[in-house]
Image (cartoon, rainbow, N blue to C red):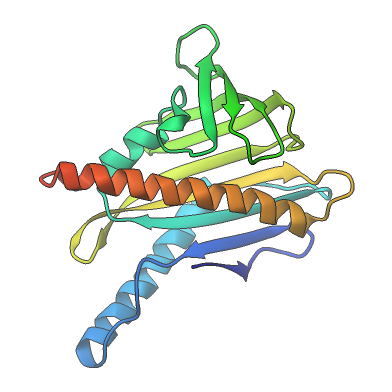
Length: 220
């Protein structure tokens, strides 16, 4: 279940959507260990957010962030996330993607065709940042027949341990203009719904790949 908790100053339109990694801990010492791990995990998430997900939404913009814990090692998850030229590898609403010029570099632009079910058919998107060392991907919407003007997103992946096995923490944040006739809450709710679908699909694809490659090491 994905929930929303308050965060940020008033007027910034910042919220944090959190997807839990699993069920609650048991009693006794196991519960103490689980609680300590949860606190450490929350601290790590907060640090990643502070360091890598800095947005400064204007008065007529909204911003939010969501997290997902995936039971697959970082290198598998990142191999999907970094595929700017093939977002359909895990994004269920993308039917086709073509990168202008064919080369993949900072400033590259992709033309995305969107499947039916969303209030759009095309999106033109520019690669702002692709960092294979820090595992950061940033994309900005620069055109298309959608209403998400000045949409900019950052997605980062981080190694973690889940149930004693290699896992990955994924954080995706965004900032976008609030369209005329809509509220900040309505805009964030729509974008978050799409991102949640993408992150759920990313987890499913990554975990399936992890099962097919059970000896995959934990990325450092």
